[in-house]
Length: 428
Image (cartoon, rainbow, N blue to C red; front, top):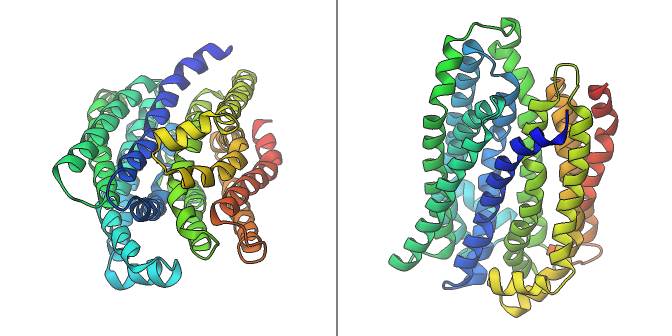
């Protein structure tokens, strides 16, 4: 097997992730040009971290659908499982938004200024539909990927990005909403539209699944079996995304805290552009490994090129005058914040390559249905991040954004090292 079929399947998904990665810079640029940009950028960044925590248990549903949905019975059972999980996370988010609970986290734990906390609450409320809509569309997109129909995933994302951009510009022109709330409403409206469209696009594939003969061993697709397979994946996402509020907490206690909270959404959005190379690779790798691992040589070659391209592209921006252009002109940061963002951006230039490696390691383990090491690897990554922050913020007195960048890079490298052996066993 050569790399050409892999590239054809990967490209629509990479385009999808690249389009989604434009959401962050676009919304940050809009917010930065509205009233009180520093406070609203900080509030939007914190609210988005909260929303990521809530969506964490459902985000791996795409990988689960790619690996498990093979016939009508497996489709119905995983669909019911995902719907129940969507309902549960929406309920949890509603409880979190209750003022006593929210204020305890935002004001007492994270130590946000009260006016920033109020903006954060508005933005988080606007993001209430986000987690369940993400879970809904990732389930149906996983079905498309398993059937080699990745181009339709990209079509849905075009609609999502168009909706997000139109909603943000309309709200900015027609309302006086704070920038943080505007960003939350624009994101929620876009992902709800994409979720509905994903179900519509998948209709034919679902009809084919329903009439196809059952081929999956029923004992492997019972609800307890699905839970045993999926819970390690959900814990992995929960740990990975749950570390964001922890990072926010440490930044809130750090030197130059407000500046750090303001620039991190911009830095993270740019790094995400190049991390998307790896994020789009995981499901493609799962679908192409093959029953006898015949696809592994081509996947390894493709992953190597992908990792070098991702890290090289981010370095080209971070270590050249393009950095000032991106941070100042494109993202709209004031000169002082643009200069402050430069060092943490450069520290993270290796993260995209590490993300490609992690995606390949995860794909091998999911294909082998050995998901527990994924959770352990993420636990090691999160532990590494927290340990670095514990040292860097109170003892080394590093600015929050610099401490966070160091922690993210070291934690990801630790996870890669831990997963070398389990993924090698899965590939054997």
